[in-house]
Every structure is written in structure tokens, then in C-alpha cells.
Amino acid sequence: MAERRIWVQEVSKIIEITSEFELDIYVTEKWIDPSLSYDHLNPCKR
Image 1 (cartoon, rainbow, N blue to C red):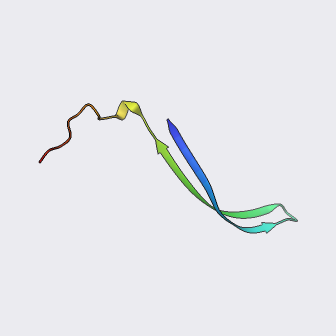
Image 2 (cartoon, rainbow, N blue to C red):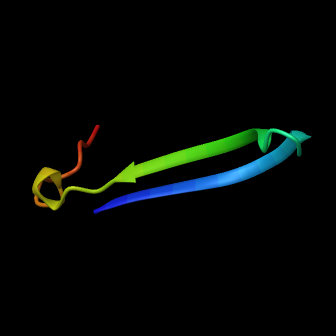
Image 3 (cartoon, rainbow, N blue to C red):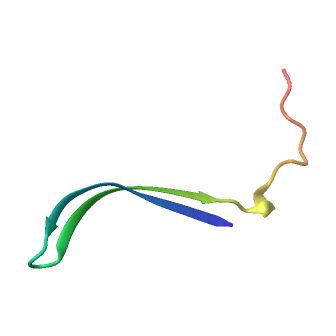
């Protein structure tokens, strides 16, 4: 499963004549692969 989130932080410039704009964005990604799960192992103990 892959999850991506994109947030627009700010629209800093808009040029209507040329339809250009500048954005500040924040991107996060999460990848979950069940085959890499280590739930079956005992946790480390001290």
C-alpha cells in the first residue's frame, strides 16, 4: 500500500496573463509492505 499526501501551503504568485503560478507545497509518502513486517519476532529485551 502506498499513500501520498500533498498540501498546498501557500499560493505566492499568480500571473493571469500567462496562466502561471507559484506554490509552496508539502508532500508526505508512506509505503507499507506486509512482506517486510517483523511482527512475528520477539522484541529485544535488556
